Length: 353
Ligand SMILES: [Zn+2]
Image: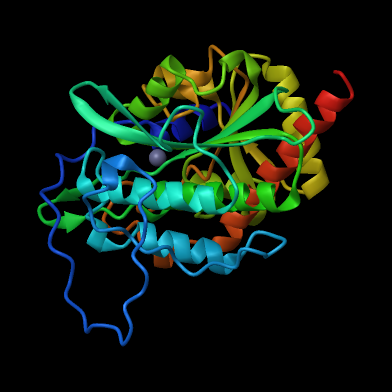
């Protein structure tokens, strides 16, 4: 299938393209009838959101032992709500989202990085934005290898007064990240996990570049970086390429970074075999030549990476990328595979490989 890589790369080439102009100042919150009893005030986790109205967390099943469709649905609908004006990087809505994500990670048992607020600000290319970073330390080996799992939470903002809600790109990846964090903590595994909700991916992977420049754990400690960007639609949705993929209805797309690539691919294959999950390889070299980037790219020279994506064409970077198009079972597959990948890293560490 010689044309496959090029065609697919063209599909993906615009993902890191410049985003919409900065969103206008947020509209006032819609007035609603006062509740019978005022709920307790929400304490912000992030100093940069202290003066903004807090976003209430969705109702979650915190004890669900497997990825919860309801939790995933709640996160996607909240993040892609048009009231957030398309989550443009640098906007006050995104500072509110960052604070909400930080509160969620802390509620799962994660801690802010040492000496930091969980919302870690950065300034790049004239843009002030923030990554949301939290750590969960493995109990018996507090200074062992760690894995970083990340997903960008910004979207395209608004154009012409219309919100680009970014349900697949990338509320889906953030929902997956939140369930991965919740389940990793709930299961009490001893592998150190760093979770990062990256800012400003759509402005040129700025948050990932900022992390690599000032990591909260030494990059040499990272056994692996897993990036989730667009994991809520069927694989290759909207593309005729889908027709050539075996078991496409349950497959996940992936890119493995070049550093330690063969070993990473073998690890991913072991995890996929355990899950009986068909995989579809997206060739990284072709994508990179065409200017495509996602948050795993800045990590590539420093650490092994796995990038999971549906590579969907349908509604990509359009106002129609809405929650009703999202398949929460597909997000759940990405959550399960990532957790099994983490378990394979743990097994590899313990066997001394
Ligand atoms: Zn994206």
